[in-house]
Image (cartoon, rainbow over all chains, first blue to last red; front, side):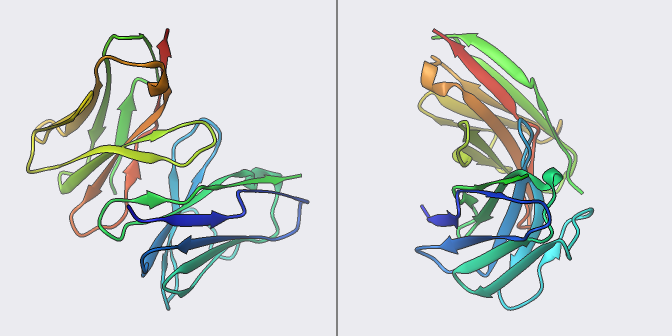
Length: 113
Length: 112
């Protein structure tokens, strides 16, 4: 299957700082990647769809100015959580579907103090 | 948009018995239904999927059934083992739409 790699796997930051999470497709090119957020004991909620070379598409209720997405190449998409607050603490997972099947990155656990 | 409901939220099963998890979806245009297994702190892994042109699919101890008329699909795990303990998510996607909508998850515990 396709390999999606995400970094960092965990990060702790102070309230008000920004955090960048990288998502890479290692053995395929991804024109589209999906960013999900998962709170403890809850389901995966789609935040946004990143599109290579163009603006991301955000789901309803997701602040685009707070969750900045950049998909500058066919193998890299980044999610930046700006001015993070404790309520942004969550498990962020990127994914891609090069063959229709959705493949997930390892996930990044963000803790905002 | 699509809405996927999943039941039960928790399920405890004696080792060796069968487990069944059920999902319903709202969008009649949905045609792809995967099931994911997620262990604590790890990424979801696809365990089986079914498309709308098929009513049932089986892979060893795991099977999925789909009833398009009723808009529901189910995951069946037979001869359960301790390593089957995890959270399971169903999902649905409609033709031409890349987005998957996930169910709320079922925490399955296999009792040795």
